[in-house]
Image (cartoon, rainbow, N blue to C red; front, side, top):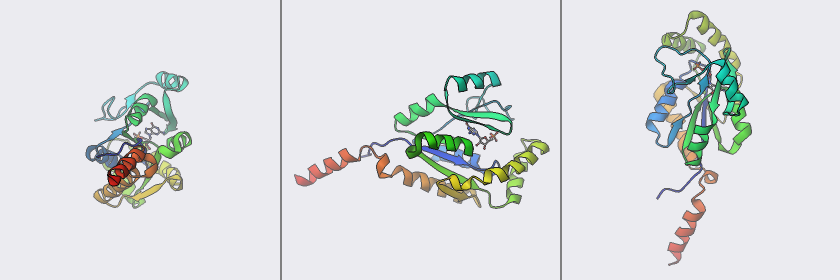
Length: 211
Ligand code: 5GP
């Protein structure tokens, strides 16, 4: 019998190119009960991206409106573009006992933590080396050299926030990193304070034992 529990907010952050997108995709494919939060952004769509699946692509005016109407759970400016998490899908998933996966930066993670500390589990993904990070940014082949250079220089800044996270995973190998991230989620799901159905479960158990 499964024990009812409260959904958690599972956050993955990293400098871009550290493999976070691949890890997120694997988690969604392989972990039942986990739903991806689709962010809104003002950045242009990249080749291969799908509106509504990878992001909700919106213009500045719509993004501003979302902020003003308090429709975003958190939001931040990254690489001159605005990114934010639409609130309603997250609240619906959590109250249905589902977990939500967020691919957001350190600014968004701070905001989520301020709002819902007990429900947030955060993981920072580190690349094994600077050379590896650069190689991945180039192999992605979606961004111009200028964009890649600015992402490399941003990486130093993003890295400085590693100590604000609950867990750190070094992505030497994607399968190994995935297994680590998966273990974190599995263990966090078993935390006593999240398992709201435990009192009833144990009471029933005691009743059966007393018979
Ligand atoms: P990209 O443009 O490469 O898709 O994302 C750039 C950065 O923005 C990544 O570090 C990603 O985690 C972050 N990001 C994406 N969506 C959100 C969001 O909704 N909120 C915040 N704070 N950051 C986001």
